[in-house]
Image: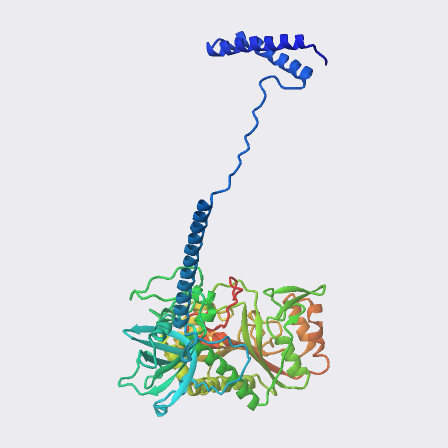
Length: 608
């Protein structure tokens, strides 16, 4: 758009005039509608001005002044350099002081940790990188006859007690503990005392020193007549997590006798003991089983349990039995029940075995081995929340051929249990006493030979005591317990068995009684009024097996191979199954089967 200079001057003047009008209106605070038309006209003229001139209306923008930095004078330059030098020197001094402080702190920490020391500190991680000439002595072998000898032991640091310039420690390995003593001297620096006193409880340590005989027995240790004068002390593996409970609390004797029957709920809060002492609840123990198993009582319980297995094998091997290993993955249910853990076996329905029953029968009666036994896991999908049931336990089973009568089997069982009980009392006397220290109980009483009652006789004893019990009904848990008390009082034994149970309460493969079709050639063994073994003479005739299976509603296809194993000549036979954890629980008078199970599997627990 072209415009003459005269026109531009007119626009400029008009813009100025309108600007004054707008300014005056705002100054005098007149209504906007009075001066807004002048504002719009002025803005339109400014736009026309820019189109004609290519410039915005108004005075030209001021140019920024360029600041010229003049060079400092020689005098100022020297002064600035001196300041910079002083500042750098000051900063360097601070850095040096900080480094020196960190060095001293590091050296102090290393000194306290035994770095560079031969007689204390953190040992190198054991990664099998070398074999030395060190010899570790088992704590249980530390006796007064070793006085004066330099020995090395390894164990868990159970307690540490700082006394003045010395420290007392209790080191534990399995069931045994020994006290170590260390006082500041020329060879024992103060940092060594502090290092030992600061180690976390339950750390794994190596303790070396001279065996001495104390003036008074050490009451807190199993090795009461010796003490170690510490010369070296190293942490092999420090406990890095806070202990969920103190071992002292976990080892404290029971405040009272807990019932061994009835419902169990691990979430129930435990009542505070009358003595006001802290005790660790069962749930906490099971959650941290690796710590709980360190207690002397638990170390003893599971050594007793191990010995039961040893004695079981020992007795049966002497009687000509052969150990077998049967599958735990099977089709159908091994005893025809519904309480099985089912799974998919490559597209086929299968389950975990709830008993080696069918396979041990095959081995003994149909395969020529005649006398067999097995130890292995047993799975029961029973949603039972009691003090005596588990979903997985260890089964001790035996099966044997008979010539005339199932009493032949009962005689073997009687001998077996007497051998186990005698063996435990002889070989595990120390362990039994360690259990008794925390869980008081009376020694098991048993007869030679084992007391035998018929089921009817047992029911009669209950009725004589005023307890309702029919001869053809199964025993309830409470009636079993009551019968155990009655038998203990009448016959002086905690261990007995009954036979001739009602056929209706026994598995399909149980041989019926030849004189009374309502009864069976079956039997149960009891300890302290609780069943620990169930067994019977088995049906060895395939036609009768099928008849009994149909009566139980069992699909013959699921047991086809089992039935077929009796079609080519099968010997008369019988046997039984024992629950290991329950035997140990009742022998030691424990109130809960979870105390005799390594890692409990019940309806609520699948870990650890």
